Length: 442
Image 1: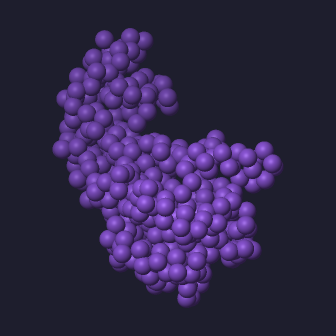
Image 2: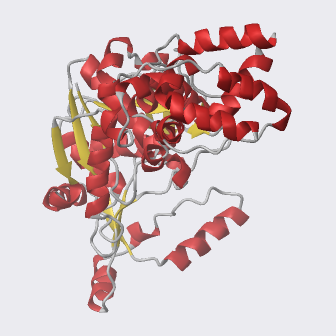
């Protein structure tokens, strides 16, 4: 087995890209196959080296590796050779119509209630006509002549699929400036690099029908298996646009989402499995492409955040040490990790533990807070200090539950909710606790 992930370095990866990369990687590793990273960079105007570097960086951040890398920009000679073969077979023919002329033809067909497909008028052009056009400075673009009938395959996700080729326009494979289009370059690469399985988005189903026809013309050996993942929609069921910065991996990374949360969430998305935070190797044994639903998969950032929270609650200090603010200790991390959505939030709690906090003044609780100050235990403080202190304070004031704990939490942290004070109080220390109780009493 050999699979490929083929992003275009024209922008940053988004979650839809990441889902395809994860699916391909898991499939290859589960079957003991190879994973190829192919950079589809034939769009010279939009492809940027910085995006290519970012793609590799983001994949490594997710925990994915690859066995081989190729760049389409290094393979133009191979595409030219394949194009000459198709020309010799009469399957690649020159066209001269402008876009305005093509649109006029399409509109005419619509008015006749016919599908707006290309009419193959260029096939009637004689060699002399083409020669005169070339002599006058016109440059042709090249279309692939689709065969009749249907392209059929058994899809790894969608089941039996077919594309009626006569209902489609002959696709342009080479632009007038001589550059090659994805529909063509992808086929050449897949055949020549020995790809056995292609897992990509549902939006490529029609492309697959066309590309199977091109593969047949070029002399495909062993048939390639295809699987098309349903596209992602947002929490409201709307298509998730790859142009939305809010779903880019870079943005989630900046927001503090951990790679284990993203990998675990995307691997389970659209299946009956419950998502769990995990590294890619931890998911290999359970991965099965046949469990992916044919229905659109709903990507909900709130679910991803919840999974991130669940992950952080069990992460060891050594794993996040470098991401924590200076001065954060293991005791601090263990105290606050159960209350974090993202690692970045640890900075605020470090201020609570070791910095300056301006607690709200609670005039209605002034007497209670002064009693709390009077009963504040002497140091050293340990994990049972909070229990001993509140037990004595409850006995003195006859308070319990929320009436006992909430005024203290507000005074000590400035918040109504937060980490367990059994662990946080020793980090705050007696001096800061005394100052905050006094300030909150007014």
